[in-house]
Amino acid sequence: MIRNGKIKVEKVDISIDELPDKFEGFRIVHISDIHIKRFGKREKKTVEIINELNPSVLFITGDIVSRNVLKEVEKFWWGIKTKYGIWAVQGNWEHKYSMTGERVKEVYKKYGVKLLINESDKLYIKDNFIGIVGIDDPFTFHDNMSKALGGLPEDSVKILLSHSPSIIDEASENGISLVLTGHTHGGQIAIPGIGAIAKRRDCNGYVSGKYTKNQTQIYVNRGIGTSILPIRLFCPPEITLIKLKRDSSQSDPCWRHER
Image (cartoon, rainbow, N blue to C red; front, side, top):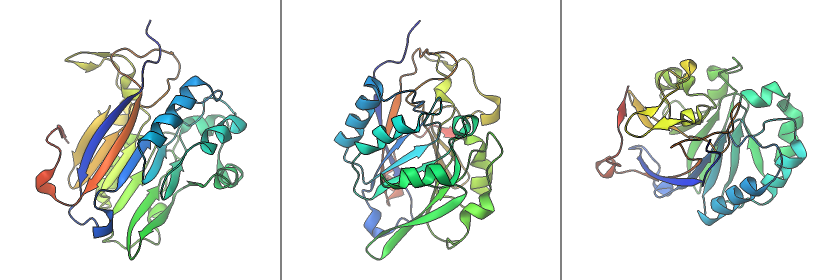
């Protein structure tokens, strides 16, 4: 058995034609599925890598915990440094252990973490802004897209944070520019040249990496931790560094999944 291995940093350029000028070169660090049980060696290494990447923002797409360990999560938040802040959404494990809602949101707020529960926020750089949309966990049917989009102009650039990729069709229908998700763990076990040997049915074939759905771009993060079985095989833990660009002609040639 191969347990959690060395965390791999995946570097991705994403082009959005309507991206406001001030967001050219904007650096997003995206993590997911940390599955914290205690603030240990793995969590310390994750914080260290995040800070080394010097992010403009940190986005976290759910399953922060594997049990009710709010104090351990506070230790994780304490060490992270970003230029503009941290935004997070809830996953199915937060709902499983009742680590959800306003009580948790207030604790996160002390560390500069904005927990979005079917709501949106605007991130301004001078007179430019992008919308950050946070969907509550679709896997446990807590999502509400219309509520989450409330208050954002229809033609604004929007980045959607969702734990599960199952939201992608609805996101595409609502003109979301970029969707960031987790939940799949990349399958945890993969075969070189073939990919994940087990794919979640609820994720509609979205397993890991980059996809497009109509005009919506998607990135599915493999996650930091594991659930059920503590095994990863040819599927290393991931921290994603996303650089936003305006020029689509310079788009990353590795985009490979059209759906």
